[in-house]
Length: 443
Image (cartoon, rainbow, N blue to C red; front, side, top):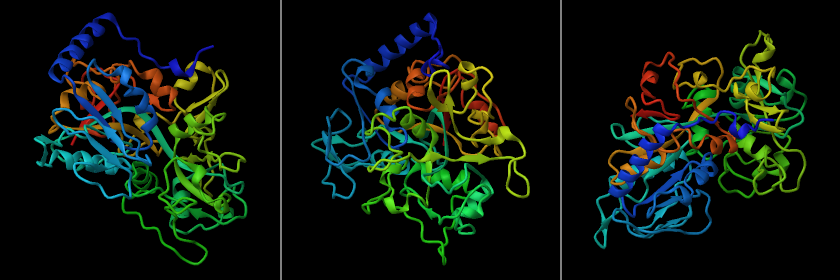
């Protein structure tokens, strides 16, 4: 029986190992005692915790992965490019040189931009190296800065809708999802396959990468308007206690809204949580009071005039259950490797990303990224951690050589192959010239 943790692991040959070892040695020497800090997206927090584990850092260096929802100060040691400083919880007032913890992809990218344009020094030490990596589950052509931003995609994810409601259908088309969020549909019974029950729209805080991607790729516009009218209450951006809604966390939905709530969800996070259903700390699909978990809704991509699917394989859910290993995984071709004859559309592929094809066959598929800034004084060390040299035969970090594929899969995401896919987005042919398991996109 094969394990999904290893279903797409790329074996690294001795020749590459020699090159990589040389890269590590030279980068470490140039960046001795460097502290690398990453912050931003909640979606990739857990997987990057594993990838940036201190055991993986070069000798003498320190790698820190900041939790956006930390409730107390997180102290990060200083180095030649940043004084020792506290990252303070959101909602507090930062005392310089301390900074507020970036919450979400947009906030992480903005903080990366902010420190690299700050010329202030504290006891002779500047702050340009205080945040070196922005975790991001979305892409921007202007953030952190056009001309200096580098996006390193390291895995595939998908965003769909989720709900705990028994009245909601199993799947809906993009057109129907838009009608839910623009108040055309206010009751589950208006959707094919639904039954009577009101709908309450939820969205995560607006600096979330999942929020931005849900608007642009699933609702069709980054400036989507959310009307409010009779029978269609305002969108809720808050959790059960009134705080900002943490993305990919159904446990914080107001219990009174459980049968009406609809909200975006990362399929990778849903898979990771489903595979850890026995651990209430990790499984955030369930209310604190218990009950059935929120389910991930499917997307219909081939529908008739009644909104019903005409091709069964396109009634696709972003997640699939692997009966061979008794685990969930993203619904990609890797399922067929360990479960021969598995049915399904396998919609989670690189070719379904809008970074590769302008109009993909399946909506919601995205890269997840680590973002660097070429102005950072710790750029070489950060590239060693999460990037690669995008030239033929270019050297690669362990993350971009395939060495972390099992880790990526174990956290619910789909590792990328060494060969890229060229689609209608011409630039996609240049995202991976080194045969890497990452993709480099500069802005």
